[in-house]
Amino acid sequence: MIEIHGSPSIHYCLRCSGVRVSFEEAAAAVREEKMPLCPKCGKVLKPAITFFGESLPIDALKNAVTESQKADLMLVLGTSLTVYPAASMPEYTLRSGGKIVIVNNMSTPLDGRAALHFDDLGEVFEELKRQFQIT
Ligand SMILES: [Zn+2]
View (cartoon, rainbow, N blue to C red):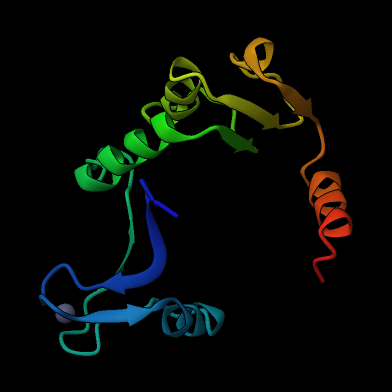
């Protein structure tokens, strides 16, 4: 998995380098209606996700383009395909000769180029669980 928009699995302090807190620890504070705070300086922790206006992690983005170009099949799940650069990943797959399968209850700009299109993400995964006997 390449997380081009980061991940909430880690929260970190913008002031103290090296201070990292797990999602579970941050979530515990939020459940108690408190802000997740740095254990060292007390400032609010930031989840390691890319906020609006921040740059995407360039290595992750490059890897995502490379893997998209190598993919024989890309599952495009629950995205409107309107926010770039993430929306361009299926286009890289298509341009490289791969196929895409779109699962979304709304139309997307690439519906006409998808090998398959499904409306219901839950139904698709229930069927995959049945087909591959996943519990
Ligand atoms: Zn700190």
